[in-house]
Amino acid sequence: MNYNFIYKFIILIFIFLIIGCGGGFSSSESNTSTTISDNNDSVITNLKQAVFKDSPVVGISYSCSDSTTTGTTNENGTFEYDENCGTITFFIGGVTVYSTDIIPDDQQLYI
Image (tube, rainbow, N blue to C red; front, side, top):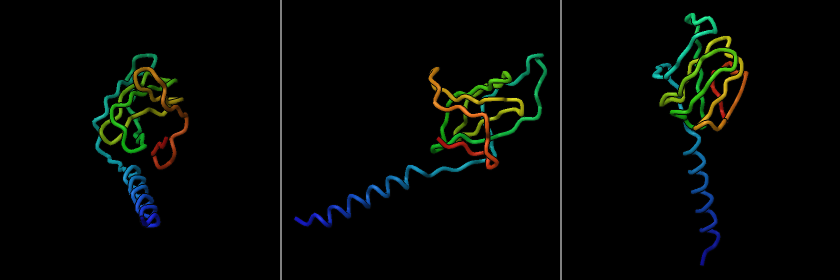
């Protein structure tokens, strides 16, 4: 049996799996579900967008510590937050999966 061929074949499959899992894209379109107000129930209009990615993560809930901004990510992983958000916490079913107070300049979050 040619183990060298099998070894190379397994490595090749592994490489394709890694490449296939890392793909992702971002879009400026937004279908995020976001509820935004400050403590005085006034509307916050200066929203920013960022993308939560491992691959695009759809339906992950998030909330801001310093405002009442909450929502879920859309099919591209996009979410909206306000400038006074503070720490953004992402969670699934009440379990925190990621938390940050810094959004990078490229507006992409990677876990």
